[in-house]
Length: 219
Image (cartoon, one colour):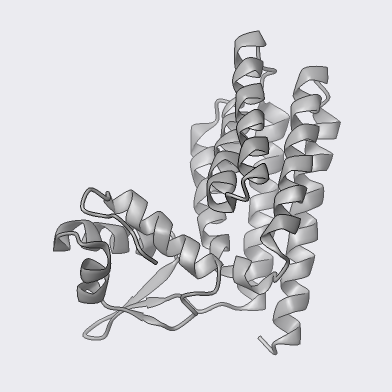
């Protein structure tokens, strides 16, 4: 991956590494050399150390004394537990959220339009970044920041399992756009059940696809 990276922050480097893991470019158990990462992103050692610390904190990588950092291993049991935890957290956040006012709805409209433009341009990396922003802003309407922080941490842990769901990005992007439209409609209608059904329905579908894919690979 060719990255203009002299000004990359530790957070951005961590996000790029998560993206490469989710696309299967960095597999479970692969050693992540700080020197190689520093050369790859053309940054000083500090942001690399900070990025690896962020990835270690959310379970994306593991550290072994005297051996270094490795992409965390995966298991069907862990995937099942993570999807279940995400479901519980998202349910609580949806049940607690306050309905958005017109200004907030206008912000959601703008994000949805941005996703449409990114999908048309096949900018799937940008699309999913915008989708995550859209989703997080909805959950933030609950004003339960502790639960939201934990849900986002679990979401980051689940990126390791994205590589096993081998649907075309255009396909999953169409799902994301469809779901965002339904979520926006539910917010406008103040329909909590429709919002819950949209969010949790797709989550459970991905959980099932992940389990099936991992079983096929003997994991």
